[in-house]
Image (cartoon, rainbow, N blue to C red; front, side, top):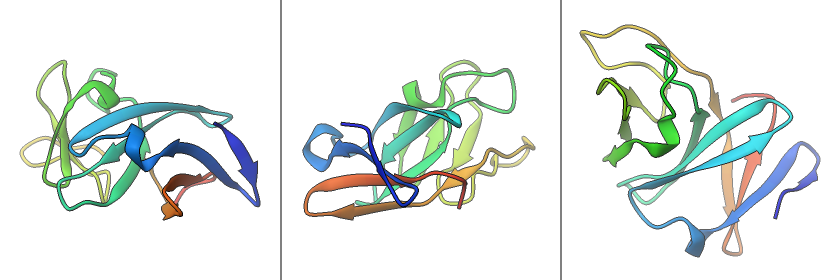
Length: 109
């Protein structure tokens, strides 16, 4: 489903990403984690945890955060920032939903 137009990449159907789940999207920028958050919105961040490189797309999604599956670091899906006391940040990406399709903007937020 990866189709790119004007830096927007079609990555999934809304129905294919259940609420409170994540998916990995492989792009020219590397792996990006796409999440369907507890607020009903979609968010995208780098798939690699800043702590020890855990795959964030495999983490537990709660509210607008994801918990890394390796060492339980919690990252904010809106900002990419680690929750205190941990420190670090991952890149965030713009996401839009149109006609039941999720698009990811390449090049960052």
